[in-house]
Image (cartoon, rainbow, N blue to C red; front, side, top):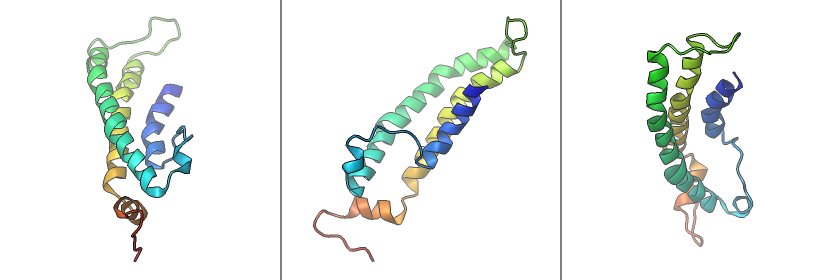
Length: 125
């Protein structure tokens, strides 16, 4: 059940910008560079990896529902719990995609300003 908590919280933490990042260089970047790193990270990592999760887990999830999978262990999870847990894999990817897309589409004033300002001229009206 811990897997369900982590998979459902992935999109939430991404949307709140509370995810863990290795910021050896990121913390020293200015806002424009940070916005660029975030945009490139979403475009080159979040979207392709999420699409791969959806694509690669689809048959796995469908098969689990078709065969009405349950645990073979005594006291294990009975149908439909294993199938529900497996369904959370593509749900997590869709949730992370939605959080990433929402972040990319809803530029707040600071992010938009950071992306459009040049190094020498920027007016914050």
